[in-house]
Length: 241
Ligand SMILES: C[S@@+](CC[C@H](N)C(=O)[O-])C[C@H]1O[C@@H](n2cnc3c(N)ncnc32)[C@H](O)[C@@H]1O
Image (cartoon, rainbow, N blue to C red; front, side):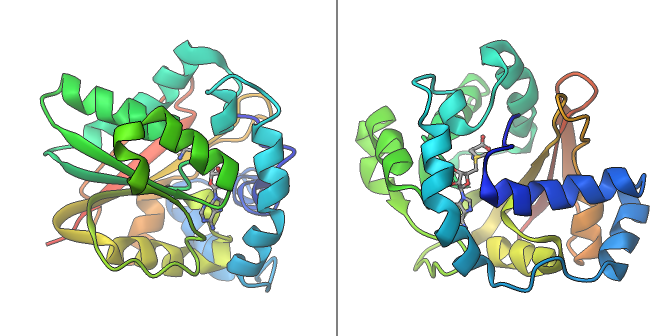
């Protein structure tokens, strides 16, 4: 996944993955590092992400390819190999919220993959980018009203969802437990929080061990999965009682 030109990910993903590589850390040792590293950026995420959202959106929209408009540069086959293991977290029908949905491709695919397993999902999404959000609405016109422009760090939804999905990268590492707690609060009772981390083959960056981060933040891990060559993507999920 190529996110090099994205300020969000230069600040977020690179700091995450770069820290893991530089220190040769995975799993629990990585979590220990989270505790000991000093904050890399003291700016509040909402300020930072809003400031960079326009340029991120422009980068994604340089291409007409829906996969590239979701920030992935590897073609459909690799997209499916790296993203579809998220489906192991879907254990029932309900509402699926993608926080940072870009053009809605992942949400649309998750709905299809869940249907193949007999679970009917209704897609929802938020993103910082208005043009990306509009593409998500066009992709799923029957659910257009479920997609909105919002900053996950300042958004206060008045409802909850069966499944809430997002990436670790949308948070600086020093706020990761706040991020996970925030997402978890949007999950309805009986639902699941699912969080992913995408490594980069081209930059030789592994994904973060999401399950260990959950444990670090005091969240009981219900399950995890990984995908792609060299397990370049990781997902973990936690049930809400
Ligand atoms: C790599 S894309 C993820 C697309 C899709 N969810 C997936 O996993 O393939 C990350 C998206 O997160 C959005 N994003 C970043 N920070 C955000 C925030 N604070 N609130 C809402 N969306 C955000 C970006 O605009 C971008 O479209």
